[in-house]
Image (tube, rainbow, N blue to C red; front, side, top):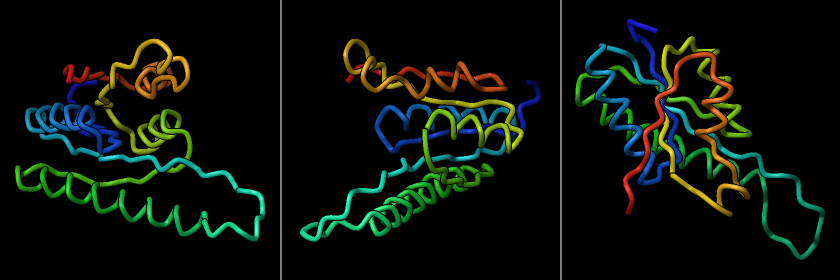
Length: 149
C-alpha cells in the first residue's frame, strides 16, 4: 500500500461525499499522490414506447454526464489550486462495481469513500455503495463517515 501514489475518490456530489473528498485531498498532500475523482452515472433503463411521453433517455443521460463533468472539473480545480494532481473519470452503471473496476484499471493504491451512514429501511432498500466497495476492492479502502447533520 505504501507509498500511496494514486487515490480513487468517488463522489456523488453530496455533503457527505465532500468529507471524503477533503480526506482524499489531505492524504494526497501528505503522500504527493494523484487523486482520481470518480462519479458514476446510473444506467437508465429503456422505457416502453409511449406516444404521449416526451422524456428522451439519451438526452437525459447526456445532461447527467455533462453535469457530472462540470462538477468533477470543479473539484479537480480545487485540488489544482492546492498544488495537487487530479484526473476525472465518469463511470456508468452500478456505482459500487464501477468504482472498484475503475480503481483496479487505474492501479489505485487506495480508495477514499464517504459513507452516508444510512441505517434501517434506507440501508435495506438501497444498500451501501461504500459497503460494496469495501467488500469488492482489490486495494485498501478508507471509509469516511459523514458527520451527523
